[in-house]
Structure formats: structure tokens, C-alpha cells
Image (cartoon, rainbow, N blue to C red):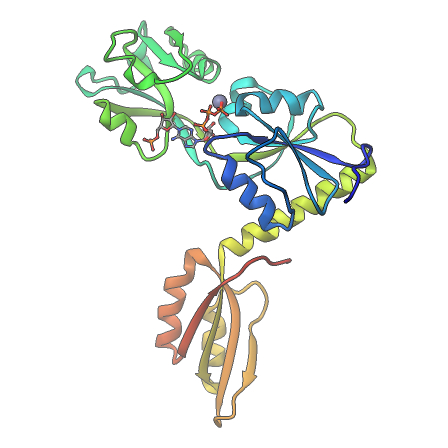
Length: 292
Ligand code: PRT
Ligand code: ZN
């Protein structure tokens, strides 16, 4: 059993139970951190790093990190922005992606910020919403609700809402139309601005580097193919590879095997072009992690 050295052990705030919990734990496990069951306690010690997780409500995370109670936190940019928390954003994490949008009943025909002048807007994000209208010099009445914002127009508590949207189906189900996206959000890794020991700084760098590798890997595919030797120059121009591809001669005269990594976003285009260039037996594999 490892004992935690309080001068170097890193405390990380993670949402206790919600949309970001499993994805955050999966990410931490994906970069090699091991935990006991994280569903049962508020503080979970990492079994193989001087790290402990503090599992709390997402709304509390920016403040805990700002105050230095936690050194790092995984939380939606929407929460950080709402609190205007004084923290360092280390990186965006590509999950928990959503947007804060103004929405209203279609028949009300609200389109521009000015159309909302004098309207009552229900939201759980009064800070971001007020600042949006202030920037646009439009006076509105912001009504703060802690949940179920989407039913406020139907209850006639409000004329419109400002709420998080991902697929848009909640708005639709409540007869509302998304009008203006006022803030794009994703999960962020945030860091305290309080001074940290060298040990903690070292750990943070290690975690960041591993996250970078993990995310690159998730967005890349390893591909292998066979091709005639004379097709190699053409194939090299097709592959937007990180480094030059590995080319190995095959027992078959004049044939080579080519291995490389391609970004997932270009994968299908690249596959088709490779086939046209003479590649055969193209195999794609997911990558667990990579250091670049
Ligand atoms: O208990 P705790 O306070 O920790 O959790 P919570 O209930 O405040 O938050 P939770 O778990 O619902 O969301 C955590 C974070 O996930 C948010 O702060 C966002 O950063 C992110 N996220 C991503 C979302 C959504 N997508 C999302 N769709 N948070 C909420 N929603 C809700 C939205 O409020 C609306 O009710 O989902 C509904 C809309 O979804 P669609 O798909 O119908 O558009
Ligand atoms: Zn919350």
C-alpha cells in the first residue's frame, strides 16, 4: 500500500455523479491511473500515482480549484465561464461538448439579440446570459432556475430560455427553437493558480503529456497495406502521416508492406485514394495511446 506524500500528491476534482463522471474516469484510467471503486467515496486514492480524486458536484469544481483545495479539475467550460473562475485552463478535452443557446417558441419569431429586449429569460446560467445581453446592449430580465429550464415558457414563468443544448431534442420536445448559440463548451482540464510544489508540477506535466497522447491516439488510426514497390512514391503523397511511413519488402517480388498512422478525420478519403493508387489488403487498427 502506498502512502500519500502531501507535498507532492495531486488532488483532482471530478464530478461525482453526472454526465462527465464516467468519461473523466475513463480518461484517467486510459492514461494509466488506477483507482478503487470511485462510486462509493468522496475521496478516491490512486493506486499507482500520488494522486487523489475529490468527487464533488460540478458547480463546486471551479471554486475548489481556484482556492487551491484541488490542484486540477475536470469540468465543463460552461461552469468555469459562468463562475468567471480565476484558474488556468490547461486544455479542452473534446467530451461533454455542448453549447449554451437562447431558445424560444417558434411562433414568437425571436431571431436577433435585439428581439429579446424586455423579455424574461429563464436559465441556470445567469452570468453568461447577462454578459451576452450586456455585450449586445440589450435589456432583458434574467430569471435564475436550477433545473428544468425548458418548461419555463410553457409555465409562463419566462418568454424564452438560455440552456445547454447537445442534440437539440429536449428543446424540440418542449416546442422550443434554438435561436442563438451564445457559448460553446466542452470539458476542460483546469489548474489552480496557487503555487505548486515541483513534485506536483512534474506530475501535472506527466498527466498532460499522457492526455495529449491519449487524445491523439483516439483521433488516429494505424493502417497497414500491401502495395507494388513502384506505387510507394504516390502512396507517400496520399498519406498525411505524422512521420514517414514504414515500408518493408515482402517475400513477393516487387511488393512492399506499408504501415502508418492517419488522422481519423481523413481516414476514409485516404483509404479510397490508397486503393486507387494500387494498395491492397488495407487494414485499420485503433491505437490505445501514442507519444509524439
Ligand atoms: O449534480 P451536478 O451538479 O454535478 O450535475 P449537473 O446536473 O449540474 O450536470 P450534468 O451532469 O447534467 O452535466 C454536466 C456537464 O455536462 C455540464 O455542465 C456540461 O458541461 C456538460 N453537458 C454536455 C451537458 C449537456 N451536454 C446537456 N445536454 N449538460 C447538460 N445537458 C442537458 C441540458 O441542460 C438539457 O436539459 O441536456 C439537455 C439537452 O440535451 P439535448 O441532447 O436534448 O440537447
Ligand atoms: Zn451542476
